[in-house]
Length: 293
Image: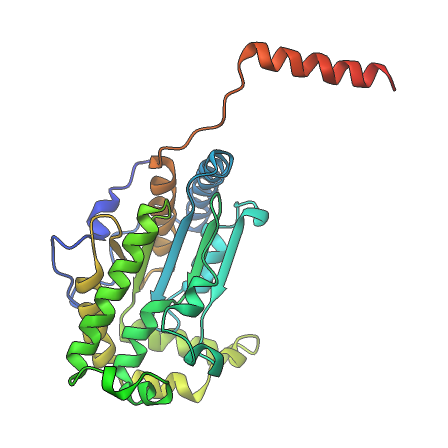
């Protein structure tokens, strides 16, 4: 498989992300069959690297998916991680916070779903909604229980505080052996519109559409600004963002597969090694057990 330079999609604080970044890139496949073959090879790489990580037992991986609706989060998760052992894989989708969530700090519900060592955890949306949806709809903050005297005087200061909280949270996870792959699926409004129309024309997918999807499209420029500010404020060398051109779903999945496979393979993990002498002793014990049956 041809090596893909994933650094072209990486933002680690040394460059600025702008919504003007293209939502398409040159195809990495010749047709769907080629795409499927590439994804199968990537799935095998991810599975092998995850097996090694699990056996090593010191690292875990968190993959964060953020995007506007219909950008391809669900389909990419299904295709990229289809080869992972399900007993070592955890996915957590996040919707609007419930009443119980609002009674805790804004990161509380995400702590509950973090993967353990040896596991891959996927967040379908994440704690970043607290500086994206909340920023676009600041009235939702009043639904919470944060003491008024602790809220900053300006919304700008509030978002800066939360950006800092998130960076500290991610640094803490990284220092404890949990690197994070942060993926922003960058789709154009025009492409999203075509996908929403296709969804409405498909009887098996109509249920996925709600009036709220239509209402949220009115805030597209606000979300673009919120995403740009969020990515630029929280992209670090240890926990960078990857902005995935997502108008082409097939390309999108291949790029994500390369990013996850490369990160897993670059972790300093290895299979525990038994010495030849210890292995010989264990073999004799097994043979002795079987001889007694």
